[in-house]
Image (cartoon, rainbow over all chains, first blue to last red; front, side, top):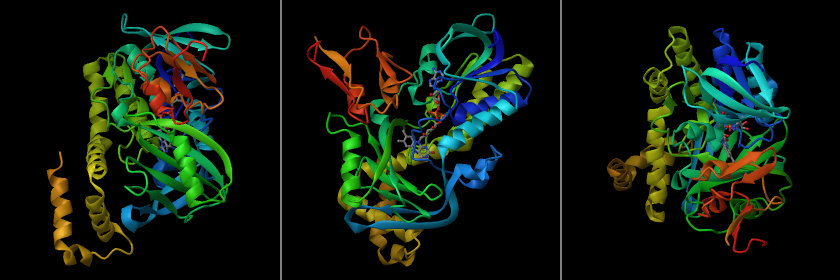
Length: 389
Length: 63
Ligand SMILES: Cc1cc2nc3c(=O)[nH]c(=O)nc-3n(C[C@H](O)[C@H](O)[C@H](O)COP(=O)(O)OP(=O)(O)OC[C@H]3O[C@@H](n4cnc5c(N)ncnc54)[C@H](O)[C@@H]3O)c2cc1C
């Protein structure tokens, strides 16, 4: 490790690795820190993501990182409603045990210096245009100076909080989840399958995601943190697995917490930006955050690069990064957040109506005509959504 | 005296509790959860958020 770098990136998840690589590509010295021993391990994720083409924008991503191609979403709703949404190549299932290290390797190839088992334990205030990051490794503690810190430390989001951004998770706007790896393919191998609503889990959903290459299924669930203590989400999910697939053979279990608040209002300071889960960049409807973290990582590197070249890493300047993110996915995440709140606050009857309307509009077997033959239902749902604040 | 207790055998090592703790009293070092008992306000948020039920507030120091 050197004493000084242009940029220090904390966390080698998808957000951090992309940011580090894009900065290194511009010729800056970049230190990428990962506190775990192995990048991406253990995986804490359902591993569903965007299209292969999209991912290649951050590649080259080798085929073996891709578990299956996804051509649709199937949602079981309340009262036997369902949505069968078909869209060819709508996304892929990843193998993040391979994908995350692949992104980190690309960063290294392009010049970033990666240290695993290296934990950023403190970030100083700005002094003479630089911050000092304290790093704990197996061999001791080191202090490194840098012109800019990229906090890509995921849901733990301690870097932001150490520097003064209230980036911690808010109880009502956070999901807790588990993902259980099960042998074989449990549901349609081309589809992501979900169960949501009053008959299932209302304040979240259950998922079954097929990993065809390794012949396993990610079966999991995520729901908003309950206001009272009760059975853990692991117990609830195991119950559902038993009910839906009594013969399922469990290979392993991971857990995690997902920010579903929509992007933080502010996530830059002088000489510091947050990226990915640390900035709550996760999609507030689906809980998906892999692709958002990568996109944010790239936007951050672009603006930081300009800042390093013009010697301006003030928060005013770095706000440009926030604007890029807002335009890219911030606004759409706000809409998704509104839809989630709308759906979860509905009583069962209204929710059933919403599912009927959604399937008529989007479903493969849905008949658009249904929207007209049940005009009152259609209008009720649309106007309720419009009025919803 | 109430105290936050980490049940290691149930823990999935996801570090979700670290992000939810409003007092920054938790941190994950490798497989170990470090609890700063002085900062912990025993609010129980991490207990509700833990996906695996691996945290509890015990009434008794030795529980
Ligand atoms: C159960 C579950 C299921 C999910 N399913 C999906 C899904 O199907 N699709 C999807 O798109 N998203 C899913 N997500 C969300 C997705 O995992 C995250 O949005 C994504 O990983 C965010 O990427 P990131 O780079 O911001 O952070 P992470 O991937 O969390 O990376 C952060 C990294 O920083 C490291 N770190 C933390 N603190 C420090 C420190 N102080 N010093 C050094 N390193 C540090 C961590 O060890 C970690 O490796 C799921 C999440 C959970 C919990």
